[in-house]
Length: 367
Image (cartoon, rainbow, N blue to C red; front, side, top):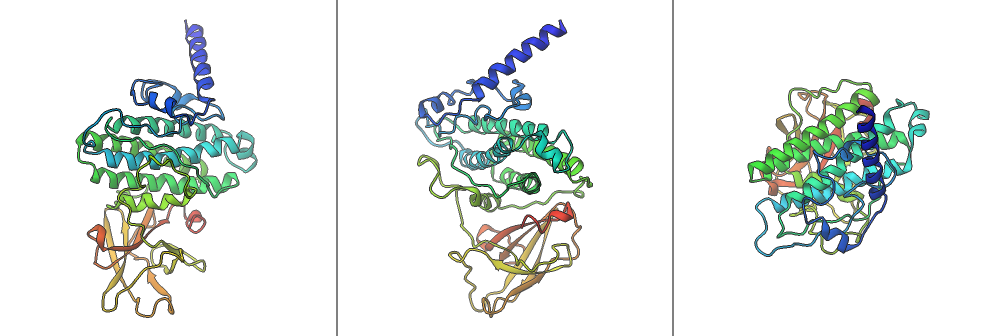
């Protein structure tokens, strides 16, 4: 009986692998996905954990947007799910690109455990499941965004794993923010369930890859403006490559001036001084005379605002000290605001930037 079950499972996975090996940008194929029962179902099919192969698994092999199949007003949380689906296409594609680029030997030769490539494939499978879950959460009256083209800044197992660590921790943060934006309890519950999966991914990386304590303190960082975190991922999207049917990502989009600690930064630990480097010459901040500005640091469930001197910028650098009160765990998120605590979206004037505190050796690497 056990052999029969093993044979049937092997045949089932082989058939899935064959289906997953056929990428499709065809819109007619995409419309089949409007039926939530089409294809393997997350939580019921082992494919979203057990598929192993270079080809993208379902539904990552069908990249076109899914047009609405009904008329009427958008669902209450459709916009939140559309933002999340667009973000998930980026995350899935990130892992899929690594699966295609590397193999078991590449990670072993780089000094990582011989299970690393297998785990990355499993995370890729989980992310494919997230794609399908998010597609199904969007109601039939709204478009379900398709994939864009992406470019990721890694060329080795080490640079991939470093970026993956930052992405997983950031995913936990923007999911927390999206839970606050969602209106329906069912949506909030589903997002929390996805966030816990991302936590498992990150725990594996911290333990197996970085050999460090996976605990981030009593609470992960709470950042209420999820779309500002999502906007950072636009850096991975090839300009003008998204399907025309896709909504603006994220929506609404503030398009705030980005910044990061200057390249001369020696440490991003609490108590360290950093210089704010506004990195996009076409999108620079505008500081009004007579207005007080702050670097607002979010960590754990709270935030601390530190006054900054913008009077002579850009002739003079803006320097600020990371609050020494913070525990050096998890991440710290920084924005420039014109109000203490950055209580509303409109009070944020630049950023955010994510400072990775754990593992410590990666913090400066991923800036």
